[in-house]
Length: 223
Ligand code: SF4
Image (cartoon, rainbow, N blue to C red; front, side, top):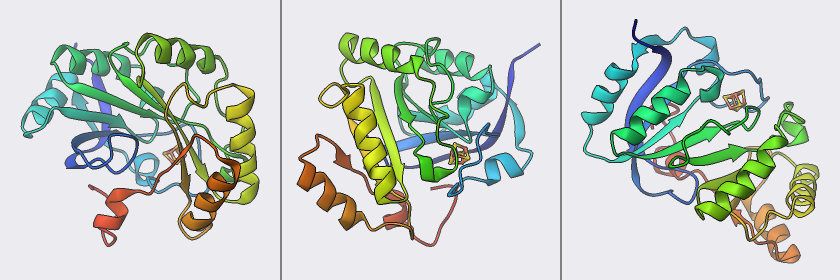
């Protein structure tokens, strides 16, 4: 029997986040999530049923687009065990593979060739304390073995979140080791504020704005 995954959508767009922002990219968005962040902009992934697709069908769809960069995202992709097989098959198919995960699942079994972009949920997300701390060691190892193979993302709702995120990266000695991205939650905090705090603190952290929401502000999915 073929392994199947519950898929919310597969689409071709421009990468809007991470250090890959601005590049054409195929997105495989898996259904379901184990968290319920209060700012979730992809709630349809866990409110709707999604479509069951085999890995072969997913790869066929990916191959129909003129692009080699593929992001597996969600929802929470690692919530479905078969995601690990999908990642391996994409690597075998010679794709450049990104995984965007909410950080609550261990990434040990993710193929080393995959670039992992991990969210660390801040307190005001409503999903604080969800980060799997054993991922820290794995992130450190991967970043030494293949620089740039992990990125950390913090989505900030408040100054409180900023202070918490700053404390987190300093406590775990992460600055300089891997790209760290701070993003504002739209309508809660101004990007300019984060820019000012980063400059005041001289943090080796990148302010990230969602490029796709700037390019296509009227479209909420499939971009
Ligand atoms: S982890 Fe992502 S998909 Fe899941 S609830 Fe939070 S924002 Fe939504």
